[in-house]
Image 1 (cartoon, rainbow, N blue to C red):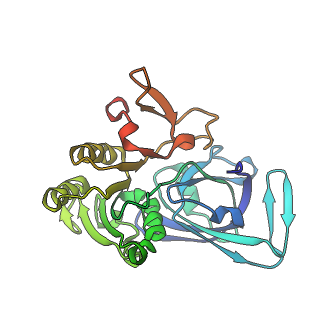
Image 2 (cartoon, one colour; image 1 turned 60 degrees about the vertical axis):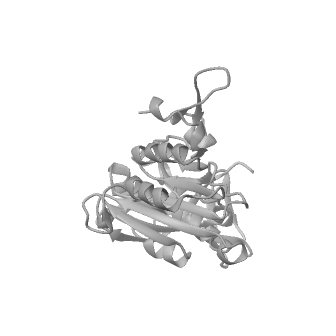
Image 3 (cartoon, rainbow, N blue to C red; image 1 turned 120 degrees about the vertical axis):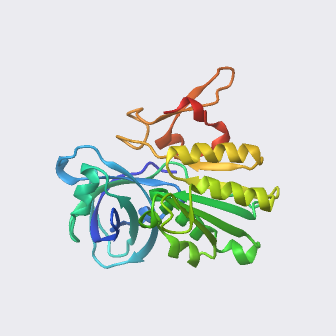
Length: 295
């Protein structure tokens, strides 16, 4: 894959979808639409404005369309091509700090800097026909993107998707309509009991696994807070299920230069070694991660 170039994109929509969550749509060059579920963008402010560092944002969805005479700024100049395919990208984000607070205040017509798509996405073997998708809070967007990408398998290969969606409260449950459109069966849990079953999403999954006895063609794909991902690793080991986890991490560059997003993994002849979430992930085979050595 060619190295991603930094481009300037335009905000075309930025709406609040829940008390702490926003959906932002961006328009930019067509390469932004070529992503695998689980990949991300580094989103920053133009002209070196404060805050200086960009923010990693997972891609919820992206599509191509054509417009006439649109001009986009790129790192080493600019281009204008009336035949150029153009991309619209959607990201979902939670307001939890200075950077996301500034994003929430942005109006259509404003510009942002984007680098990506970056990282490695989910890989679903053709042999997998029973898919468990687990999402917690803001981890839902890449899982919804994966469900959308797998929707065609439902008829062609008889693939079954079961979603386990968790959050602290009903307001933290994202992408439910997207999962339904993809044909997935949804199970919901909230820690305060405001929607679905009260408790943790991992508890709900364990109840399901205990009664359904998964088959060899079953796999787990998840994104969410670290404690959730670590607990899923124990369940996957107990039931001998393949498990891919998309990790969340603070990043300064997004492509491995700053070395600020290391994760401990199993080494060859050593007890452990390290990988970068931005470059080697964010999606990992969960069996390779040393969950007890992190955080």
